[in-house]
Length: 579
Image 1 (cartoon, rainbow, N blue to C red):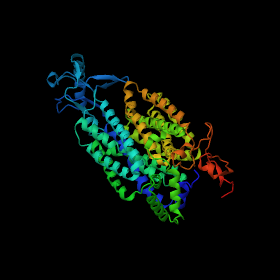
Image 2: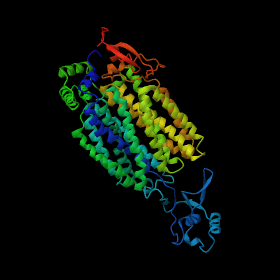
Image 3: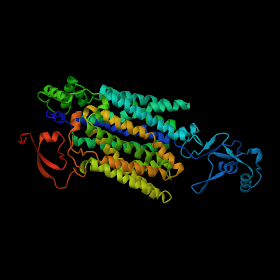
Image 4: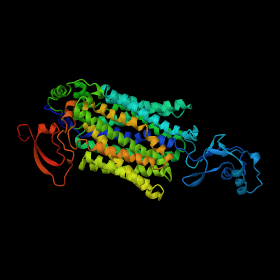
């Protein structure tokens, strides 16, 4: 990379000024607050309250509990006697002698009458919800898997959305694809709540969910491609902090609304505002350059300079032309080109594996919240607010320890706490929740770091396609995440064994990635293939308490042969003269 790199040009027009601040406050802040509602609202929409067979004929002077004692048999669950949720006695009001003592009558019914499947639907406990999708569709007693299927259909929509929208964004631009995706969710996010047939419930969920990956990733990519290396971890960690606040308030909305349709309206309508991005959000200058749209690149760089109060660089047009000739030497055919070069190919596979392990672990743990003891709203809030500390710790660790060992270490710790959770299932409630919180803390830290790595390892020409590919494959495997929680019906320990195995695989893959702390972003595939190629597996490139001053030449730095994260530097040109 002998030509001037884009980072230098961006630094001249301003890579951390008013322009970047506007993008941050107008898009990164509000979007990352709202976006967890897209992914996690279905957890509450499909919550299934305690239920029992509806047996008509209850006298007005008899309480629900008394009627249940006479009409609903008890079954053993986790060594405790509970009313059956799917069976009733084959009995009617005419068979009951209401003048008898309730206890003796209940014992007689239990000894005399057969147990049969529910004949007239179900009654649902209304202490937490007036209605959910599961209660509206009676997804219980042999049909309960439809709740997990509905959520998996949503994840399948994520897969298709990733493939279609993220690939298109490398060809058509980040901004127009983002606006189209926003409209998809705004429209179908509402429609899915008013269709009644099972087929359309699944179809509209799929269509609404196609928008999640581009809404989450494209604005972040646009901003990340216009800021300095020091800002990249800051923006990513801030976006995760805002995700945490949005996620933490979600159980409050679910508790207050008590109805899945009302909750859906609350969490969908705000997205209509972001259609205005078509007129406000600028296109990424890196993407414009990669598509050889030089006039637009120059115009946008001038606008950035003016907003940041910087003078327009001399010979800006000539510099942009040199950059275009240097980096646009081959046509862009999308993510398939990531497998052309050996180093890029291996790192693509490793990033995708890390992304997938994070996805499965994070959402598997989130979906399992409803299986935990205690109040589901409080449990969800506690596991959510934990992410605030995760993001702060991840921000510090990613910038001090480095990306690679932060992610690898967090995978190990999340896995360890997942195993410990098995031994607390029958213990004190506070201990079980604490262990879950610790596992959630570490996997959230790991998830944040892999976002930074995707933005720093994939080259600009294929950054959205590469991130999209990783997200696509991750989401494909992520369709099984709801079933991780569902497997607790066959053994409450099973989800944790699966999470442990996923975490260990994530550790292995993340430890094989290069350390990108303070490194310049690769612009082309050729840059990416020679990016940070001299690292050893056990090397540590994070910051050290006592930094040493070193001299390196500019060519080695730009090729990624030297990581300067832990050094005070004097950069020299290829002749060894200090600049």
